Amino acid sequence: MQLPASRRERWYRDFIRTYINRDLAELGLGVSDQAFGRLLRMVAYAPGGLFNASAFASSLTFTNDTVMRYMSILEESFLIRSLQPWLPNLKERLVKSPRLFIRDSGLVIPLLGINDFIDMLGRPEAGAIWEGYVIEEICRIVGDKAEPYFYRSGGGAELDLILDFKSHQLAFEIKLSTAPKLTRGFYSTMSNLKPKQTYVVSPPNGPSYTGKKGEIYIGLPELLRRLLDEVG
Image 1 (spheres, rainbow, N blue to C red):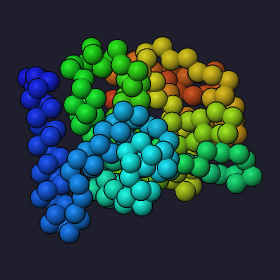
Image 2: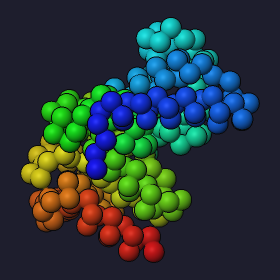
Image 3: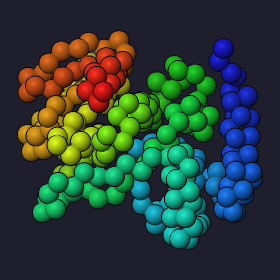
């Protein structure tokens, strides 16, 4: 049964209060619950956004050192994922800042004040929330067998996720659509990076088929089954 929005909001406040006042205190990490909550909410409002310590510090009236300290706590306690950029060619002009996602998509919902699934679909953050959820599900399956990255060139060409298995890479473009449309930049990136396989991941009821350049369009459940077979 779905909890009313007011109860989810109370659960969120209680979770943050317990996490900060008890769990972090037991680790000797004294932080301000109000400031910490503001930082977590800021990450939620820009899921998958590029991390800029100075911009965070300015918006939250923190120092850069405080932002970096709090972000480190959030990452090391598995509340956020700092997805690092894939930098295969240092001569190429690439985005070098990490992207930030709250790892538990269930926590994003009360942070954004979303009431239900239909409400979420109408929000501009819907695609990025789906992307963060898919990334976590993929990383859960592969575990420590691969390192996750994203790719974005200075010109804006990108791939949402790259799994580096050392011997090869798998690439993923994540779309909240059962009929995703891809750009020329996507195909250019595929050609430049040459991953072993590229997947275009859609919601569970999306079709599975192979595209014109060998990319595989696939729903999330089927993708996870394939990855589980691949990693053993």
